Length: 334
Figure 1 (cartoon, rainbow, N blue to C red):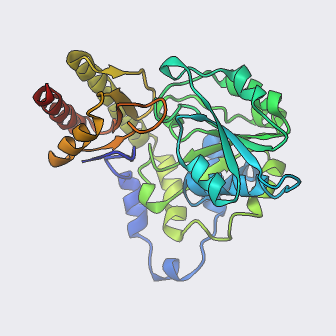
Figure 2 (figure 1 turned 90 degrees about the horizontal axis):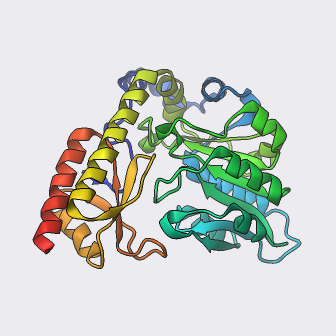
């Protein structure tokens, strides 16, 4: 069971699979037309088509945002700003493009200090990254927190990563917000709630003029024909997404209950995963779970996540097997 990358463990919607089955030789042989896919994403988020930039997974959206921000080179080593712990690709891609990432440690229980974050901006800061819900804790912050930060750090871009927003049903994507916050861009992925991780489909949402610099970075046709065809079908199947989000919510509760029984520290999560502190033997726990067919993410070496593992909360039946394995491993270790 792949419970380490927060994928949709049930896979894509049956409607997506039927759409893919209808594709043929010409679909593989010609470059795709993005109009229908872009319109479907815009309609889903209730914005205009030109507020949407389709990307090859959200990672490409992050790469494009950094690349666009770093084009201004009045300072030799441009900086990105973020928190620690966080999604590691912010720093990986910053470094890959010749920059340096500055991170602020989160407080107890991954508490976030908006004023300290805004104050950390320097003349070298080109773009800031924050996620809501936060990864790896699953903690949710009120939307107004990020809007205030965007205003405080302007004209520096605030990239708000909403990879897991489907699981909490709250988002900063709003036509009025985009209009009043020109330095705010929002990243979304269709890998988690929609089960399209293998197809690599993402989007960056923002004012059209705010996305123009990113459009100069993203290569033409980076989204393949199968992903382009799958997006409208996935977004149309509201029942499937609602079912999977409900499965994730039940699974989160199961993991939390198991942790309470075992005396393990965990944190309230609104995403499709849970962070669990299993202690100094975290690496051994990961190995023992893998031996039982359950792959989880070892986060124990990261600042703020000492002794922690992260477990995807997906299909309930898989979670039931996972918590049984976790109970067995923890009790054996004691």
